[in-house]
Image (cartoon, rainbow, N blue to C red; front, side):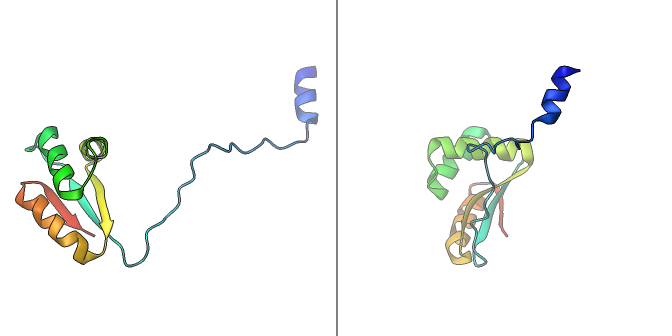
Length: 102
């Protein structure tokens, strides 16, 4: 009981964790998203290679996106204006991937 009384008598609030992740929406209203969807046809290697070529991803970014698509069903792979994303979406589609602009 003494331990509980001492704890309950302690009035200071717990300190905030300075390393805690905070989600910040940095998208502006005119930005669109290029979304890649999961399918049962394309290999991870093909998806990764295509994202590197079309979206200028690093190998690590492309691999992370491929896993997000695989486990979540979709992933935003690029943001920007519609005019910027449209040719990239076309290239993803021509490569046999499922993608759209939202």
